[in-house]
Length: 176
Image (cartoon, rainbow, N blue to C red; front, side, top):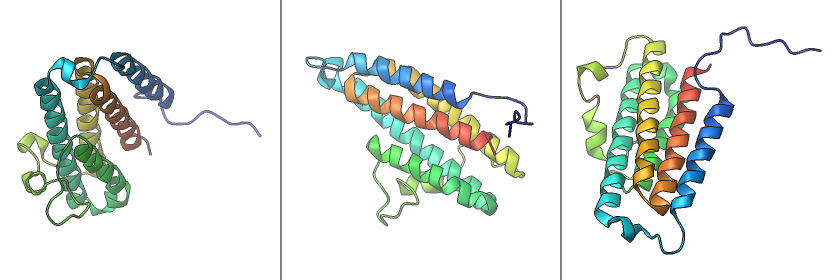
C-alpha cells in the first residue's frame, strides 16, 4: 500500500520547521545561562518587566480564547486544552489565578476584559475565529522569541519554551 500525498495544499510552517526553530531558540537561550550569569546580572527590573509583560500577554490571550469559546461553543472541546495551557503560561510568568481557583482564567480582570478593541471582536464564522486565535498566537510567539534574547538564563528558557508552545498552537489551530 502506498501513501499518497495529502490532497490539501501546503501552507504555513510545517511541524519540522516549528520544532527546529524551537530547538534553536532553546539552544540560543541555553548559551546565555550558566554559572556567573545569574538573573541579577541583567538587572532584575528588566527581567521582572519581561515576565510581567509575558504574564499580561498570556492573560489577554486566554481572554481571547474564552471569547471565541463563548461565541462558538462547537469549538470548545478543541480550544479548551489550548486555553488551559495559555493559562498555565500566564501562571509560569507570575500571574495569579482568580480567587475562585478554577482553571478558567489566571485573573478575574483578564476574564472580564474580553477583546481589547473592536478589531479583536470574534468573527461570526468558526474558520475566522480560529484564524483570529492563530494570528494572535503567531504574533505573541514572535514577540516572545525576540524578547528572549534580552533576558538571561531561566527567564530566556521559559520564554523560548512558551514561544515554541505558541508556535505549536498555531499549527493546531490552522490544521484540521
